[in-house]
Image 1: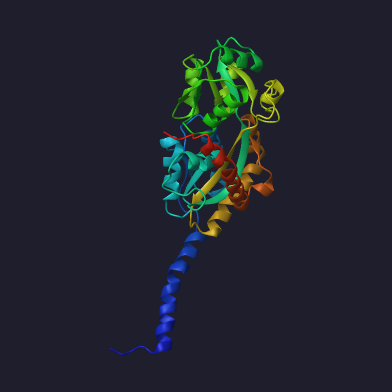
Image 2: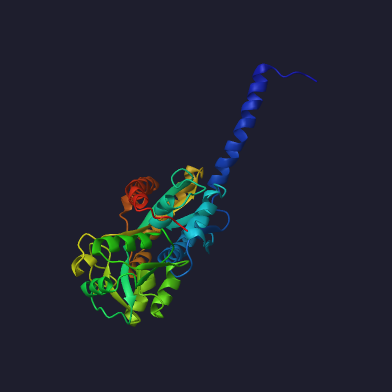
Length: 330
């Protein structure tokens, strides 16, 4: 067999090494060529699920491929996020989540993945407050009355929430500390079933996103005592803030974002980010999110870099507080 010259050998070796890179670039340029899946870490009916479906519908027209929403529940959302973290970094599986699933869970669970290092940020979407609600038969008609009733009935009331160690659970713990009240917590596999039990009078209170609670508030089947933000909801201007109602400084909001598996090509991240930005600029999308009590982040905060920096800052803010309170997932 004829021996190759050194120069010829090096040329062939370099060409062989470049083949995966060339094919990877061509593969990224052809993206997307098949349906994309957005994995929601919660059951249907909550804010994350509804926002995911609104975005999927609009992204479908921008990307020219079906965008499917898949609800993967269990372990307070950690199974869904882990599934995306382990997925192929090809842009066909995204995680939509919020500060509960992509910040808090890292302090309350021993995760088999790293929230910062195993995911690629795509875009910040929107933010919205919680609403403090109670069963229709609760004797109190305003926040001060509710606090007085809770103090008169220590350890007798229950608050439903979407999973131990979740943001609504933490908001309830914070509420107890700020008001000097004591009540129990009942975890659910999502906020929608908790609201159903609240309507039925099986639990006494819920701190939930407006998507799940406002329809029932408007129907008169549950009571609303305030929103957990500095300003009132544009979709429910008659509900005061907790600050206005007598609990100054109580400000906890739930923000949403999109992530991809680590190692996804930058060109794919950029293409998805551009599609998301276009969707968030669509008047129909903006109106729908506003109806859900959501405020869209400014355009300069919709970048992958902004989401990455914000998520890191939120982890640095909340993890010490959660760990000091010894809040653990179940």
